[in-house]
Image (cartoon, rainbow, N blue to C red; front, top):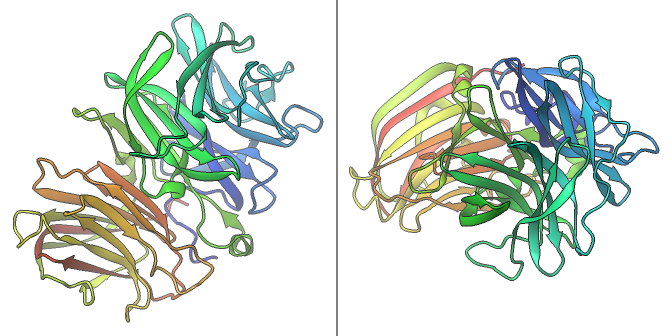
Length: 479
């Protein structure tokens, strides 16, 4: 088995996976559909793969449910979409790919989501609205609003920016164009460039606001950028954004997320983490693409959205090791503190740094290195930079393999009113997810070339800092 293959994150038994699709809980069971090529670890021949779970973490692999229909409106691919409850019938609303054309199609299940039948009248929305010079027309997100169904589709308006279009229907079959839900500005570069095309829109209420999640890309040539979320007000069929930010500082390594509301009312999201190694290595390994851990989404009092791992992830914890009251001396980056017995590549770590107990902690930076080789030839750095108010994951030294794509991934971390930084780090072979105070998250991919790159070390720079608590769990595999 490929030693970079994750053990407690979801991925199919083999071949290609990308966007999560059709997330739904049905009669107590969670269902995860996903973009899947069942024939090879390359991005083509898109089907909907399928898995089910009682708890969001232990998954049963099931046969693919939707495949391209030769000669049909989805003959070149069953692309992304959602799943809804239509009068007691599980119903998929998805993008059918017809060469360069994109349509909205329907399918439904009568046997508990195991097999699906496509609607004979597909596509139910064959064309975009007339008069719009658009760059795409895909990824339906559907919900019930009073006596009608509403649907958003991702697009870009040439020369204007990314956009989300809103449609209405009484029956999921006959759709009317309402207008743009919201439109971006391709000329705006600050505080964040939002691209010229928005795909995979998710729109939903959260607390007293509405959230719009979009995956921003540049269309010529097609290039994914990152996932953004906007918070704001929804009224008169328009969305009025008030704030926006990156959902994850790992950019393309947390992409095309989908959120759903489970039967207890929680809003939960999964995202796709693409690979950072050469396609030849992916094909040789026989798999590509990982789903991130499930994230619980909640509104914070300051109007931003918090993200934290769903509590069910904690059921995977195995053997635990703990350290308390560790003092990190200044400038220990070159010779970080390595703790005896602390190593592994399938771990959860929770680290509490006390900002008030060290010399200059609020002006310096500190953090840890994971997947570190004994001689320091390879390592991946997780850094909290207090002066710049940033969380940073740096993979530039993560592998000696030149076919691995390195990078440095920063995201803003607000310290206002905080005297501690709490890091939760999930390391699962080649995927790394870092949560800082549930406010800043970074997903990254790492592929050390050395089998002994399993060490963990702590460091401080331009300051001394105290580690109040460090808990480490070996994580059990989900299969």
